[in-house]
Length: 567
Ligand SMILES: Cc1cc2nc3c(=O)[nH]c(=O)nc-3n(C[C@H](O)[C@H](O)[C@H](O)COP(=O)(O)OP(=O)(O)OC[C@H]3O[C@@H](n4cnc5c(N)ncnc54)[C@H](O)[C@@H]3O)c2cc1C
Image (cartoon, rainbow, N blue to C red; front, side):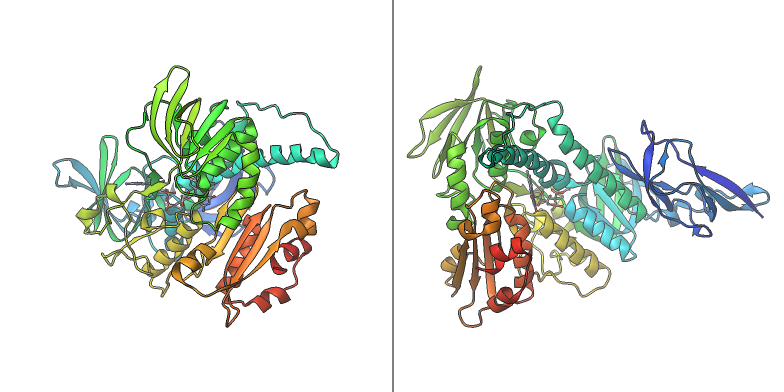
């Protein structure tokens, strides 16, 4: 026997009139309990509405573009009944088959605490780009996966307090700068009015959409997300703690993707809210009059760009003899020239030795040829790099080797020294970049699923989303000189690029390093507007083993050909 059941939009918080962006089933489809039926997208998040029970779709009442609220009928299901009673999937299907965790039982975890005991094929620690990508890929390849994340939102540093919010704020900053530069073309705008209550909303909206989307994607793949802090308790188990509650999860294989944290310099007054890190800077609580940025690397300079555009007078202090240490000086030069005219000071080969809180600001002592002995700032941003989280994972209990800095060494299949435990992302080494983390994550998940996958990418592009942008992929000149690698170079200054000049900018440069014998491209560096987009083609060229002729013979749209292929 069967009976028709109308499925309606359940409680979706205070959201009303939410748009249907996807209908995931068709008439006649058989769905299981918890299968997703439709996707909704509000201004805060996207969410999927699951089937409350198993059945066959009899009719669908909504379509893409419709607006729905709690109680709106979505579809009707033909549901099998047993002895005249609806067979509710949640009752008929044991938890062990609908959940990726295959058993639950109470037991002592050995510390005397009572902990739930669970078992899963693949356990992923950390919900950042490395963790969620690994979890999704492993699930797509048929594995039952549990993902443990200590915070209540997926996305890790990148989505919550890193790449995405910084790029959202940089978009605002660059728009302000570009609008001001239009004055040279005869279009003048009034000075921007910065609504501090509203300015962070754009950033928060973007972050909310992305992190909400991840939760929906996890659900769709039946990846069970557990909120809690995971530490390895043995080579096959983790203890997950959240408040008073704890769970021991036994795994067949695990992927550690626990990321990194901001580095601190000992002795600074961290309890003073005027001393902030990148997370504090992204919160954009106010626009300080004078800000000191300690660290002239990518993160420090991106944040300096945001605050300077919003009206803060910025000073940067960097220990090395150039900004963005590791990047070729000729690529950094156009950026340095530009910001030298915008910022109050840029001190190279200098350091901060002491910071003391005073009523009217943070008093900072410097050491360096051109620095004052001390100065007082409204805000000090510490951006001196990030440290991996390997030392706080209980790695020793699992027998996983962690080096003294906190990195977990892995092989080209992302395996740690314990063959069934893998690690990906910031925790395994430099460069600490989200796209490296996701690439490694796919490798780890594929190896776990039995594929012969390896991390054998030739290049991992780096981009500073400053104004101008700086991007490079593959061999740098600094590296070539340091390691004695033979190379030749072709350079193209953008002062001769029509596209660049038409944008009112001539401060760009493209250079291509190639093997003198084979002319195979070894590395590309670009500085200029949208360098971060242009580098993608260079990365592809190097990955494909292209030589200079391949590049020269590639017909490209005007904007790219003048700034990439002519070099
Ligand atoms: C301001 C800023 C801007 C950036 N901009 C860029 C950019 O433009 N492009 C780019 O490629 N990269 C950028 N990055 C770097 C990028 O954010 C990282 O490389 C990326 O997030 C690394 O991903 P991951 O998965 O290894 O680690 P993370 O993103 O750090 O995620 C690790 C997750 O693990 C969780 N976790 C840690 N320990 C535990 C535990 N014991 N139990 C449970 N969960 C745990 C953490 O809460 C976190 O959610 C930026 C970083 C910052 C700070």
